[in-house]
Image (cartoon, rainbow, N blue to C red):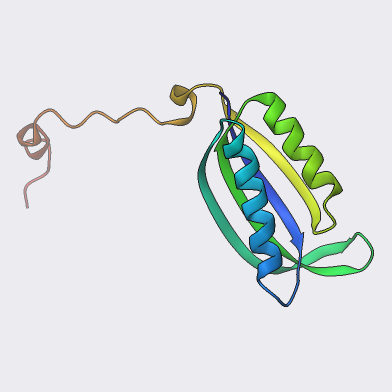
Length: 122
């Protein structure tokens, strides 16, 4: 399953339950169809760079990292496209396999004494 990151800008409401419900809906949609939600992160409430949909000037930014098949991603996009709480959303494909996403371990130094011999003495 490919690994994706979704960035979403939601309309700002005074009650927190609107954004909570939207995030739960997205995560549940992915998990109910065999996907895995890796991380959900809130970037907070910010002033939008321009007016979006009607007259929204403030938005709640959040991201979700998840593994899902392409049909699940398409159905998630359709759900969010028709949701009035969503102002903008985009998905980034981070990789097809775990090896594409996880950085390889760096090799440690073989011997620290060899480094000290190259240092100048004072």
